[in-house]
Figure: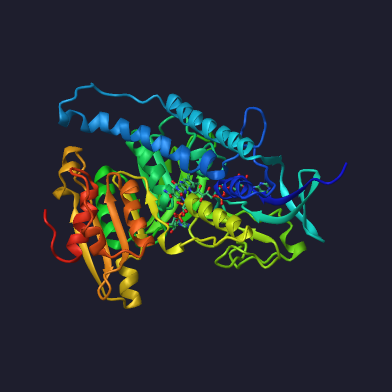
Length: 476
Ligand code: FAD
Ligand code: NAI
């Protein structure tokens, strides 16, 4: 049988990989995508969508939504005169709903592959070697030829030595999204994005949540004004975040029903017993098994595939995108890079603006930002003007019962160009897009100040923050 040959072979079917395969096909390349992980598919077939669709963005947001509704029904409806009695949560139904959404979306990508004539190759992909016109890649037991290769193998949860993750008692993101009941006492190691989102889900449903964080500061990557507000609000909600923690011995009980965590913080050595423990201390790139060393693929000190701004590796015709390369581990960043790479391959002006990649944390209130934080501008010695508007001064927010938080805009003192926008509040995930568009077009605060915003909307707070940069807010 002759060797299958493609213009573009993508290794990995997550947001970086499936988007790359679809865009390559749209641009007229013959495209294939190798994916190995079955993620417990009932048919035993590899499921497309990667971490994001199977065990990341989508399932976590489904659980966040259900738990948010539960919390509103439990605590907020009464204020608005809605009487529902005491709601109860049926965790298996909540988890089954989440699984259905995941099935729908992962199956949908198979449909998109068909529509775009992308060949799906089930199996693990690894480099065999360079050929006259490209690369040989082994997928499963078959060797496939490709003129260009895009590595999109993503990442997996980082585990800690001495903390055995079994995804039943001690979980990473995979088990954390599949708990079958609300744990009475939930411990999380790491108060990053997963710690806060998963901690919020199970706290809202009634768990007593303790997050053990190594750093002394809370949400160090966020603007510190936002981080301070978030810390205050989360503490009020009952999310106990302990900072400056050194986690020691972790001992599962013999019956595997609880786990004891020894740790040290400013109050000295302590012990805590949890019914479930989630380890959320970052992620590691998936480069094992690519046979990278044999073909001379350069990795960074942190084990990522080394790429330039155009996602080119050191090997001719080999590109890499998404979590397996530098930059934020975000699905939309992976997709942007994927599109850029395919357009560059097609001789077009592929583009990815790494300064305007938004961050969102889907807690309640939501947290979203784009561009520089105030502490970064100070450290870089950039002169800026800030405009800050609390949602308390926004009619729509009050009507929605969501007065918490604010919008803060940072603009260059000299040119008025927007350098960063930081939002904590309801719908921050949607509101941030306006700031991204403005920044992508090199907009000034004055540009946003002169744009008509619908009334009453939360987006008026973005408008007012732009006005506040020039010290002329109208409603605050
Ligand atoms: P992945 O999604 O990891 O996909 C890589 C794929 O490659 C996997 O399917 C893997 O099986 C496959 N693979 C690996 N090696 C091989 C091989 N050798 N051969 C064949 N296949 C291979 N990001 C957001 O932007 N928003 C969010 O709300 C968000 N929430 C998240 C919540 C959680 C709990 C987690 C864990 C992550 C979340 N993320 C979120 C991050 C997001 O999931 C990742 O940034 C994104 O999935 C990265 O896409 P990727 O294509 O680079 O890699
Ligand atoms: P993270 O990098 O966001 O946070 C990890 C946290 O663990 C940090 O605060 C770190 O200081 C802490 N930590 C590290 N080692 C520790 C130790 N030994 N003891 C105690 N604390 C320790 O990583 P996380 O939460 O695992 O998420 C991984 C990535 O997934 C995120 O960085 C993000 O890229 C992506 N993600 C994105 C989401 C979104 O966009 N809404 C949601 C969830 C994940």
